[in-house]
Length: 310
Image (cartoon, rainbow, N blue to C red; front, top):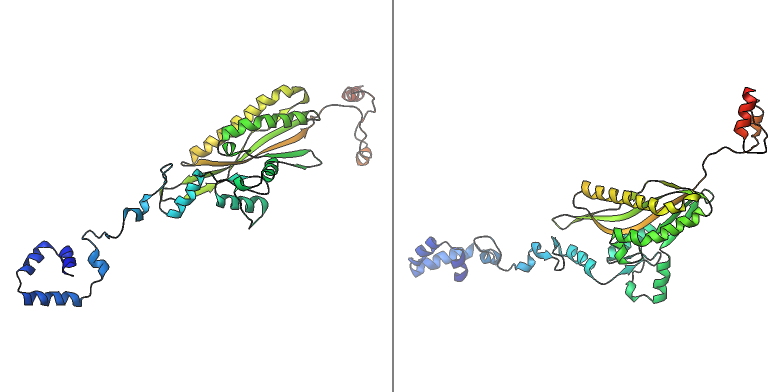
């Protein structure tokens, strides 16, 4: 008790106490005991710092040893450290892989409407199951009697998933083959839409996420212009990168967390042109106000003008 009082009593008061007789000093000591100070209050230094608090308990020391990122909460640090691990979690429905279990859970709920599912480490899955999941990374949907086609291309590995430039480079050959195949049947129009996940960390360890889409402009390619595909594709990639850089510039602190997928939308294109005779619908025939020349060649416009001004 006396040792604790020595720590907290000012020096000048301590000198006066030493001048008291033993009887008076015991009276003062008894008075202090009656006030019943807590142990924690006596253990505190005049600066208010608790001697039992170590540097490891200080929230400012929740720092990643790999990249130096600091967090205010230990659970945020643990979640961040998963990005540096060698563990990969893979979606059993489409082959999507990530290093974070919570990201996979969000993916399965958003993309496959799966609220609860068993999450496994991809490195522990059988080889055949992994191979089948890899083959599901391309998905094609059609509409309007196959007039509109949407092809979804997903990253094949983690290198593509975390590098947008590498993702484009690896998918360029696949996209060229798809467009060349469609041009064998029709003229086409196409555009690309890249879906990514962006993340922004705040100084207190919290983070915000966003999933924007970056689109290219619509390109038109005729069947006679197969050689234009690489040029039009590069123009589309440049437009996507410009939109991506503007997003980062306008929202300071955003960085790419992962590439989710690329949507390639292809439509059949049939330019309007003059042609031969086409029979009018019954309602237009009865109007008696339309000239529809029944010619056998492709000079219907010329014939129409000839009869009009003859």
